Image 1 (tube, rainbow, N blue to C red):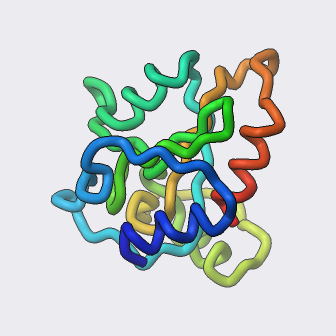
Image 2 (image 1 turned 45 degrees about the vertical axis):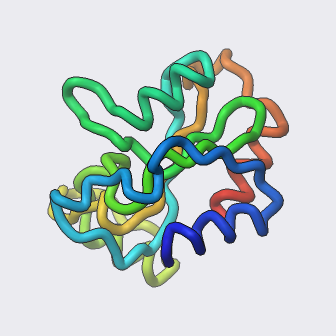
Length: 149
């Protein structure tokens, strides 16, 4: 789908969307094709602070250039769009796992990294330290569910 259709779909799910900079054209497409898309990748950020989290996910860092996802879901449940197209969010994966995702079957054991996951998934980073103590507010959990839908 186009960036405009993606934005429209998120808003149709009732999400509050924040468009960050030139998100529609901010991508890593020069590294290879993006698509066909077969799923949604959701990670936690291991960061604290919404503004800092959005900035890191948009720009990346020294060892991994941005965007690191398509949208950042902050604690308040807002989805900050930081990129569209190929992003550094999934990395290499197993072709058997991708085939199972496409077929909507149980996932086999991941035993090789021979497939480009950045090409095949929408990616959402969710603001959370991932330490088991940092809370997941209800607004954020609902936004994660709606974005994945």
